[in-house]
Image (cartoon, rainbow, N blue to C red; front, side):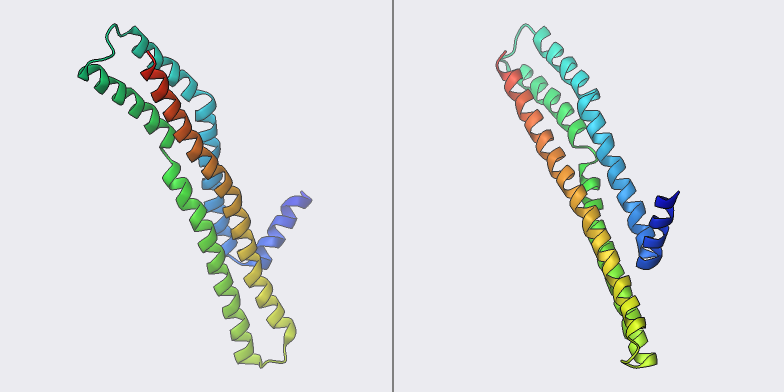
Length: 170
């Protein structure tokens, strides 16, 4: 329960922008977990299915066979890369939402300076805190997603190339 109160306190210090950031980060991590699940379960079955189709062919050298090979590789590649563009967009959005929080916090600082003068350091510090927390949260979310996004893209490319090699060796 204490952790939940700490999260709410953090969001209160960072402003409402952190709610939007939390939603985008949740979508991003849902996509990451879904793609990881796909890679380690469904993709393995898909590889076995495609290899069985290719191995069942008696002839693999004609133009027609080459087109079937391309289609099979394309099906596997499509399954591996689906959702990765949205994942990359979520990573970029986390950074931009953090920047939006920075701007909102700085507006608070400038508003305090305009209405109460430069001498109210406590109000200015609250605005600076409200500016830096979303920036930090946006960067942490983006960096965590960036690593997994790059890994998943690399894995999709590698798996597609390995399948293409395997279907050629028949």
